Length: 107
Length: 113
Image (tube, rainbow over all chains, first blue to last red; front, side):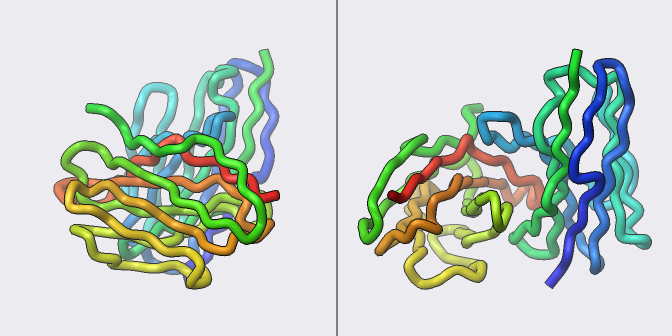
């Protein structure tokens, strides 16, 4: 099956810093989503991005499908950005999740 | 529009018991998927229902089952609970007009003692 690797596993930042999270996947996919899981467990959609680039406020994402990776950029990080960021990929209705990047932002 | 809702939010059971979890999708969404999240295995796909039919199933034992009703609400059942079934169970819904984007509910935290 498709393998999904995320890096780094942990990231500690001071408020205001920028960061880049990476997602590598082992096969071609037609579905790629980024999620943020808050401390209460809720998974929040950030981007649906099987290819190309999207931006939403301080967040942006780029997927290079031909090279099987996606990047999530967080600029001017805030304490509310803390949590775990997941990349999930798939070709059917089933999503395969990476192991996540745990982000801690300190004031 | 109201989001995906799951009930109950927290549950404590003992080994050998069975449990039923409920998920109400976003209004108009006809597809419901279930995922299990544990510290050891991460987020894993359980199954997906569309129009009351199971369309896809993950690699879980037969103790895990589900169903979908005509109003798209879904339930999942775990029989003969084991300690390893302790997890956060997440439900997601999506519309076939926006086929790919899945929206997740807040989850049900199950603790098996």
